[in-house]
Amino acid sequence: MPRSEPPAEPAQKMEPGRVTEARLIEMVFPEQTNHYGTLFGGQALALMDKAAFVVASRYARRNVVTASSEKVDFHVPVRQGQLVELHPRVVATGRTSMTVEVDLFAEDLLTGDRQLGTRGRFVFVALDAHGRPTAVPPLPTSTDATGG
Picture 1 (cartoon, rainbow, N blue to C red):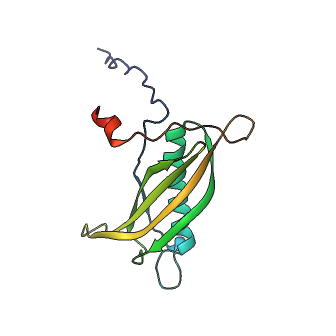
Picture 2: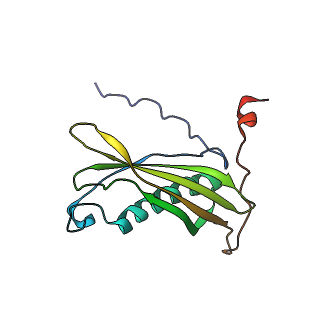
Picture 3: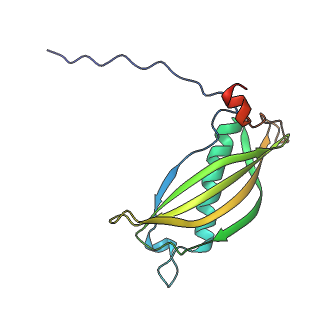
């Protein structure tokens, strides 16, 4: 007797301004590390920019470009073989820009020990179809979320 497939879930649409954070996980491989066996700072920045790009794009539902990296603090080295968990979140919006803070956590895959490795802030600008800056939704305030 042929097996029947379960019915497909109806498509969902996430409107602009709804997704304010994300989580991405990467593994640190030898080609990403320096001669000390720790993640190159530039590699950490690239991973953080990528994570920030994802959340900014999902928030604006527009093409976005990195305008600046405001401040990046390296707290502890991230070693080869560790996981990095990136937690980007939109923390502010302007008329056409979004500020995204990214925490990069280093996690030992076998023990589960984890700590904040790096924290940084990135600014993105949303672009229209002609490559010009375009409006983004305002960031919901805590009173918007609670209905008060």
